[in-house]
Length: 175
Ligand SMILES: [Zn+2]
Ligand SMILES: [Zn+2]
Figure 1 (cartoon, rainbow, N blue to C red):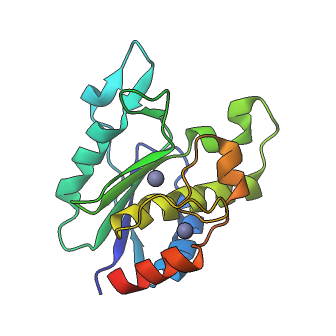
Figure 2: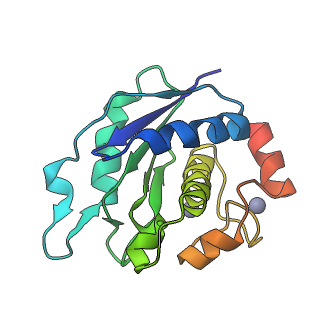
């Protein structure tokens, strides 16, 4: 069973990754390792938007996959894809790599006092969601399912950290 590697992408405090890892291990029944940090490809930065092109960073994760089953990049910077104001994360289903941004998961981003518990919960949900895509899961209409699409942080807070029975069954049949 191929394991999952988490790659810190230019991240200030990688301690959050040690907290996310056990949740991912339990959810996907895969060993999770923490890889060495990488730098953000400078070409992914769009100075007009002051954001980073998510797909460009995702692409830079592909060569790191090697023998790993899945790669999850975690970054602090704000991500976008053309046509959307921002994205919480993105997955490359074909190559089995995923990326999430922590930027908009902190209460501080919205001018509110930080809440570490809520921050961790959001990070776990986004990580499980994007990795879920790499295991073949699509967006789920159930608002409580982790595979529900998050348009806003409110959607993220409403959904759970786990899969609905239907997505759970699909996941089990694909891994
Ligand atoms: Zn999604
Ligand atoms: Zn579901």
